[in-house]
Image (cartoon, rainbow, N blue to C red; front, top):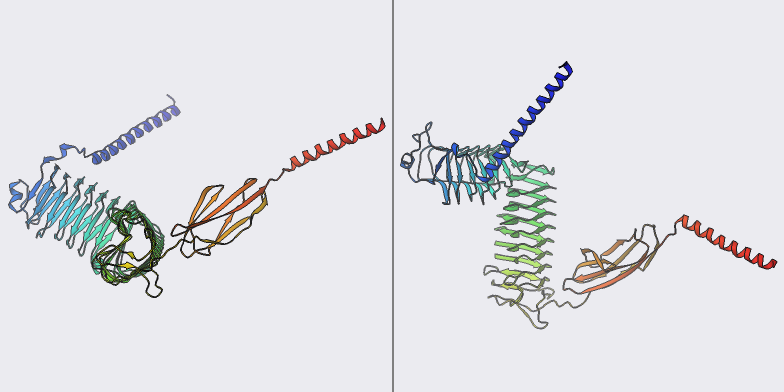
Length: 599
């Protein structure tokens, strides 16, 4: 074998060895992932066990766990495999000793690990795999807790739910597929190097306590967790975060973010002057946006596909404005609890299963110019007073549900110039009033509301114990009016700058549709006296019918058609051919004439 052949043979051999090594390693990794997802963990690494219940110190010894329960020699619950339909895998309460739970695999119905404090000694939960349960870890009232190097997967609600645990350490854990990692009412927590996939953090605490937490190098769906403590005049505009949590700051703007598949996209706690602009928050498991603070503006945001809760949650906040947002396909669009001076303006809120907007437990608000459709209860007030509800559309709440629903704690609200369309079909009315002294018309203009089920005469009776009526029902049988439109248009094929237009007027405009030769190609909102322009360049030669139909809120409509004729252009080569043919014909006729004359 010559030298060159030897080198080639050696290289080929090395390539084969490396390829086999890579494939073998990859197969091991794939198998490990498959084992974790299926629960097929090698039983040789574990001792098979039933559920562990410890209610007093002696139970550690009686169950045969090693250690003495003191600092430096904790009781050890280790290397167990617990698969059970019982509500818990390991449940501990009523003890004061030091103990660890480590290297266990637990699959239980409700709680993989459930510890109820207070516990005087330190507790460590390390290197465990917890799967297919409702709560991976549930801890209450347990200081100096350490949760380290665990993998917690496919939990119905909580990967971890930890209350009142000052000084806890949550480090190097992987949380996969649950509603949230919930850490509440704790001080001086260390939360580092954790990974969340299809879940996220819900850190709920006093705003000032945020400053005592150390939260670094955590990732949500492959992007950093944005955790901001006491920010001042901060603008967050780079779309780089998997979740954003803000605590105890002033004048913060978050804009142009696209965040989803987490617990809640944006959480703000005790921020004065929060502005949220043009953010997209989809497919979350708790909320799209959650706010506790003062002077908040949420504008031009899309929030949707949030279950089991809803799009925007405003709690214990003052002076909040939500406007120009699209809130859809969730349990609710907006819920505001104990939050005075809240305004919802010009939002589109649709396809929410429970309600479009809910105001609860306070007073003074506004609900203006929103469209709320297909959303269980359109607007639900619970013990909320002194609010004006005007110029909204409430549409398609199903039977037994209402466009507006006031409970017995709702007083002194004013409702006027709203359109109720097909709510509570087959019921007594499209709204329900169980409150006191709510006025269903504008007292200055004597204008009430429109109801699609109005009989046509007399007062409209609002269902409910309040005995409310609307004596000034809006009756709209008038169609929109075409103010002006373009004349029919002719242009030569290939010309540009060809535009047609319509302008219509209506007291209660809603939307328009445009059709080309009978096929709808556009549906959009319009306002009275808007000019609707349409460029018609690029059409094929022929006659084209453009029709715009204007609709008002009551469903009245008017259609207007403009004819656009496009004249075909004869190509130059065809023109030359026609000219030659014409000349030939003329020549033949001329020659024939000359011959005839000679005869």
